[in-house]
Image (tube, rainbow over all chains, first blue to last red; front, side, top):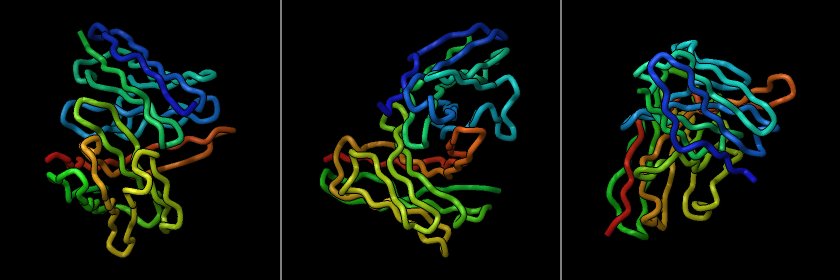
Length: 103
Length: 125
C-alpha cells in the first residue's frame, strides 16, 4: 500500500514536547519528509532525510524513523508551531495530515 | 532569492480547460525535477504530477491521468499544467514545488524544498 496514515490531531502545552507519527509500508524503504502548513499559506519543508533541517528551521524540530513509522518531534513547542503537519514518502504520497494545537 | 510563482487559476465550468503556469527564479531551473501539488478546500495535500529535468519522464496521480499534462520550458524557466475535462473534484489550490532526491546510507529520500504560494482553481457551473 502507498498510503501514509497520521493521527488527525494532537495538542501540546506551550514549552512541552509533542511527537507526530506517520505510518506506511513505503517508510521501510524511504525516509519521510515533513511539511508545516499554516492557514492560508503554502507548505514549508521542516525535516527531510534521516533528520535534516532546512536553513531557518529551528532545532526544536527533529525527525526519526523505525520500521514502517516516521516521527516528527517538536521539543519545546512554541505558539507559532500551531499548524497542520504532513509527512511525505517517495515524493508522490502525502500523509493524511495532523493538526497540532499548542495550548 | 529562490522563488516559484504560480498563475493561471480561475473559475471554469465542468468539462472546461485551464492552463496553469509556474515561473521559477533564483536557481537553475533545468537542473531539477518539478511537481504540482494540490489541496482541495479543507482537505490535505495531494501530489498531482511531476516531470524530469529534460521533460523526458512525467508521472501523474491516477485521478488526473489522461486529463492533465505537465510540461516545462527550460528556456523560459517555466513549468505548466494543462488541465482538460475538469471536474468539480479538481477544485483546489494548486502549488508548484521543486523536487529533490538523495541517497543516505541504504535509503533514498525525496522532498520538496521550494514551494510557490499557489493558484486557485474552481470548477463550478
